[in-house]
Amino acid sequence: MLQNLFETVLKRRVFSLLVLLEIGLAYVIYTNVYLIEQAINLPILDMEIGYSAARATEILGGYGPVERARYEIIMMADLIHPAVYSSLFGAVIWGMIGRNERKWLAIIPLFASLFDWAENAAIWRMFSEPLPVEYEVAQIGNYLSLAKHGLVTLTVVLLAWLLLRSLYRGIVR
Image (cartoon, rainbow, N blue to C red; front, side):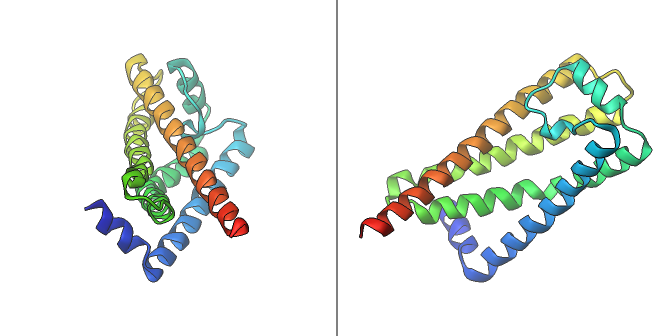
């Protein structure tokens, strides 16, 4: 099943569409993140690598109506963003790994996206309930955030290693 997914993504038109979607979604998300940070000098919870209930309450409590509206735009874009980046990165990893026994590494970005969606659900709950943020919800969001950031970092390191290996092999040959 995963083989069919990744091979379909690697086809020229699907890959191009995913790259365009990733660029568009990243633009929407990071533009709004920048505008929020410039307006109130607070990050969004998605960008925090781990947080406590007090930190979540501080961040969410610092948002005015404009920042809340911008965060809602980010959360809407982040509904499909994990699917786009995970299938794009998974397909690239799948295509760059030569041996079949290591192709399983292509599922790392898919797990990152699952933790991303779960973290988004926890953030949405914190966002929609009155402050202060419940300790348990913040802890779950914190663990999901740490797992997501760890898997995304692992994906980036794996992609960098595969690209460097590919460059090295191209130079040596």
